[in-house]
Length: 335
Ligand code: ATP
Ligand code: MG
Ligand code: FE
View 1 (cartoon, rainbow, N blue to C red):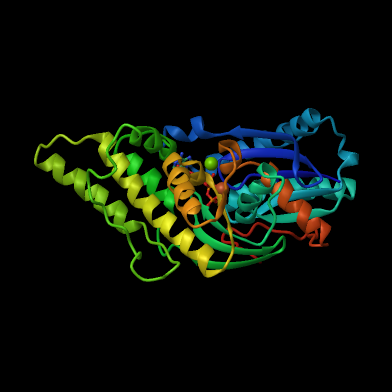
View 2 (tube, protein in one colour):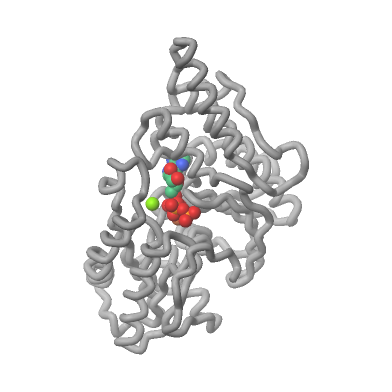
């Protein structure tokens, strides 16, 4: 069973072919990062235009690299939310056109469920049930994955997402977009205990997150230092900020796994690529006898292979879409 998938929710145009749900035959990712970098973030209108230019060539390349003809495809998956509406619409329109022209079933996929499913591509032995921590540019959520098509949201951020906090802090530090990998690199040379930044909502056993206070604390620290003419160590600020984010993520993820009595924890989304998060969560999970899974860097950030994997499991259970499928910018998990 071969699934073709298209992903255009943000600033990556991607298409992939996956065999049997778990084997990647191709995963073409055309990144727009250089286009948006000079604006310090994603410009939605430009993203949509770039997707229009790229989507068909990227699909062609995915089929070609997989050595597969369109007629051999069993299902066409596409991200229909959450994401930027204009960007999503390009992928949805392309997938619907392909499905209509060929008669191949269409499968609308939730982008966040896709991020979680990247782990099935990276770990052949992984199966539900488990708890997933989705940490991306737009989301920070704990999800109970009971089965391949059964999810429950445990908790999410009240304000900024973890990745958003990384990107905003990086921006005020003068680092290029996207800021997460930049802070990760800079932090390696810094002292994570140098500055005591706040860890929000950790006291009570709440599964909600909040990162906007932390972001403000970093901005205040930088502004005050500037006013006093004090020299700050960029590496110490990066390391201390990152430690504050990671401490909260690690403690809540482990708490959630214990609360839901699962011995498997899955990391997903762009921030899952963070080296300190991986290291600290590995330590905490070992201590608690929890098996930790996370994908390689390419499968952490946006890609169509994870969408093809998710589409496969939906297709197998008859969860297909009709040609009225529309983009849903604020789509919730498990819907
Ligand atoms: P969403 O998935 O919520 O719609 P998105 O698709 O924009 O948002 P992803 O592609 O999953 O987000 O991830 C991008 C985010 O991951 C960015 O905020 C980026 O800074 C962050 N990121 C990537 N690598 C790292 C890293 N090593 N450390 C911290 N953050 C990282
Ligand atoms: Mg991106
Ligand atoms: Fe994403």
